[in-house]
Length: 593
Ligand code: OXD
Ligand code: MN
Image (cartoon, rainbow, N blue to C red; front, top):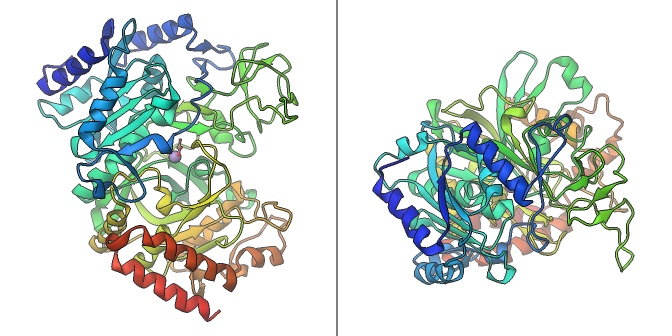
C-alpha cells in the first residue's frame, strides 16, 4: 500500500519482533470489514446481533480483568523525567521500549498483525494528524474503523515523510501484571500491551488525540482537550458553539446531545453535536479559537443511556455499532444494560458470560449487574440524529464559551463565570471531581482533575497551565470561561438539579453572558447568575433550591483554598506565577464572605 521506507521499516521492525503468521493492511473496504467481522464471529471474539433489530451490530466481551483505563499502568516516557511532571507515571524511554519488547516478543505467533492507517480529523484538514496502528486484535480494527478515519489516502498524505504517530498494540495474553500503556511524546510513539479495553487500545483516542496531541499542541501552538463540542441554535437560526471539559463518565455525551425542554424547543432552540469527548482547538479567522472533533464515532458509556436521558445516543447505537461488556439477551440476540428503559431480559448472560437474571445476588448478597458499569457502545458519528452540519468543516467551529465541570456533591455552584481568561485558566486548574468506573480504582473519591486532563496530559502539567495562559494571550476574541456542577446533592445524598435536558437552562444563561444580555452577581469565585435569571419556565423546581445550589459557602471555600494550595505544591516552580496570584486573590476574597 505504500513505498514509504519509514512506514515499511516500522512495520517490519514489529513484524520481526512479534512474529505474526500474517500481516494484513487495512484498506477500509466494505469487503475487508465484512471478512474481518465474519472471522471475529467464527473465533468467538464477536457475537452477531439480531440483524433486524440491530443491523450490522456486534457484541464483544473483554477479559474480566480488563474493563477500564489503567492509570497506574499508563506512562509518559519523556527523555527527562521532569518533563512528564508530577501527575504522570514516568519510565526512561529506552528502558521502557526494552521492557515492552521483552514482554511482547513473539506474542503474535499464530495470529495476524493488522496495519491500520488512520487520520484524526478530516483527512487533509489543517487540524488533521495521521497515525499507523499495529494490532493483533480484530476488535481493535473494527473499532478503529468506526472511531477514526481509516483510509489508504492517509498513506498518500503522509507521503515520504516520517510524520505520523506510531501506534503499537499487542494483546499478548491480557496479563494484568504486565499491562503497560506507554507514550513517547518525543518519538511520536505509543506502545500498549496486555489489554483489550478500548481506552487502552484504540490508540487514536486517549493515547494519540489527547496524550500525544497535547504535547504536539504545546510545541505547535494549539490545544488538545478532553472536551465535548456542541452548537446551540437560537430561534433566529444563529448557532453558538461551546466546548465542555468534564472528567470521564460525567455526562459529556449526554450534554453534547441534549434535547432542550419543551419550552425551549417550542421557541426554536436546538442543540447540535460536533463531538462528545475530544476537542482540538486552534486560533483561526477573526482572532478567535476554532475547534474540531478529531474522532469519527462515539465510544460511550452504555449504563444509564435511555430514551429519556439521551435518545440521540440511543438512536446512534441502533446500527453498525459494537457493544462491549453489556448484558446479552439470548432470546432475541439483542443487548441490555442497567438504566435502559425496557425490562431486563429473562434469558440473558451478563457481561462476564454467566447466566443472569435481574436481582441475581453474589456470595455477599450484593446485586450482580447485567452490564459492567463501564460497558460501552462504539457507534459511527454519522448515526447521530443531531450531528452538526459543521462536523466535517475542516476549519472547525468558532468557540464562544468554554465550560469546565466536575462531579461535586458540595462546593461548586450550579454555574459561575470566570472574570477573564486568566481567571478562567485558574478555574479550570482547580477542577476536582469524584472518580467514576471509567478508570480502574476506587469510585466516588474526590480528586483534582485540572481541565479534566489529569489522566490525559502528555507533559508537565505546570507547562500545560502556562500553555493555556499563552494561547489566551494570542487570541483577541477569547471564549468566555465557565464552571458548572450538575451534581450537588441534598442531605439525603440525592441530586438537587434535574440535569439532562434541563441543563439547557444553564447553557441559555451562558450564551446570554457571552452576548452580554444578562447581568450577574460578582462573588469571590467569579460571576454567579441572579437566581431569577435562570429560566425555570415549565420546570417544577422551587426557587429556594436554586438559591441553595447557587450558594458559595465560606467554610467550604476556605477548605477548597487549603486543598488547592496543597495540590499546587506538586508543580513546584513550574506552576505559572499567574496561578499563584489567582489563588492568593481567591483566598483574600473568600475571607470577606
Ligand atoms: C472515555 C474516558 O472513554 O474518558 O472517554 O474514559
Ligand atoms: Mn473521555
